Length: 145
Image 1 (tube, rainbow, N blue to C red):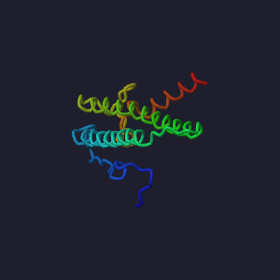
Image 2: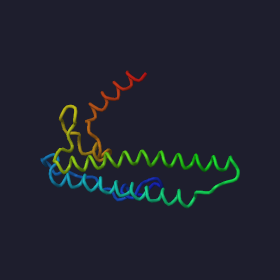
Image 3: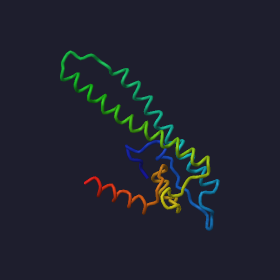
Image 4: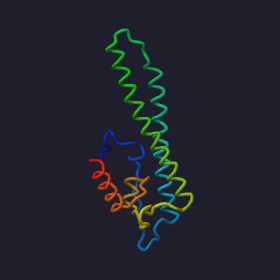
């Protein structure tokens, strides 16, 4: 199967966890699977941070033309906003790894039920089950507009 251009290195090598029949939820193997998933994701983000720093250093030109300078600054601002979002994501990844270390991973913070392996593979930093997340989004939508 061909790999899409926008896929990350970790997503190219991702192998879904297949629990055995009757396997206990969030056992050592599952925790190790998610820990590795998070560590791979964290490594990818760190590579992107390094790339951005190099790019900003290499591409910093003092253009005489104000339009060129504005275009460059807008590009830098966009890149920095993206890195800021990734910085916040790195914080969430670190917090999630701590939850795994404390054996407190994979259960909904609102209702306590299992979040589910497939949901966690799609969003390893998820803290709510699908139902609670849906309710949370509905409440946010009603309050926000």
